Amino acid sequence: MTTNNEVTVGRTIKRKLVLPLLAGFLAFGVLIAAFGFNGTAFAVPLGGLGDFYVEFDELQGDGFKLLPQMGETGESDSEPLVRNEIDEVTIQGLHIYKDLPLPGTDKWVRFHVESGGEAEISGLIQDAKLIDADLNFGDGLSIEQQNTEDFNENWQQHADSIEITDASIVTDYLFQEFVNLEDAKISTEIIDEPEMTDDGH
Image: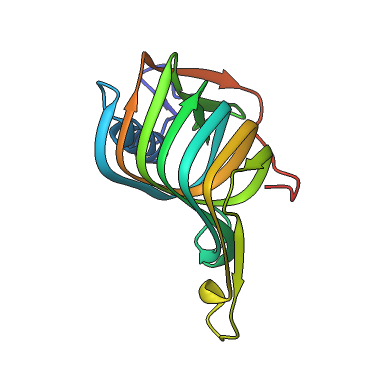
């Protein structure tokens, strides 16, 4: 269209661009709030935002419980997951990240939360759809099974203590009563494509 010898080549619909961008930063804001700007947070759930990726070098935990769980993921309202509950946790080399599409491009932005030192967590609950790690259970390992129609109550595994090393976990829900990240670092980067699990998501 021409007006006074001026040519309109294209127009940006700001609403369509801004809404996905704000949604992405809201998800990142929730991620930051879950761990606190000062690296400490109390009783904050992190879920309903799709897959998060958790990596760490070593985890030492006391009071471990593993049980089945039906929960929401980034692709479904209800999927079978593995719930890990640990009373007290100490983690070395913790790295949590999430990928979000960058509006208006074929690029993605990856948000990172990293602990440069030791992470301490109390009352950890995590629903994972993929766990790739080396596990070492302490004394007192037991498995309990009962005949029930409730999927979440069919079986449980308990251990007094657990050691997890070289872990890569895809999780859709995190909760902690208390978390303290030593030397916490928050950063972003532009990537060509998101992280993919073995099931293609």
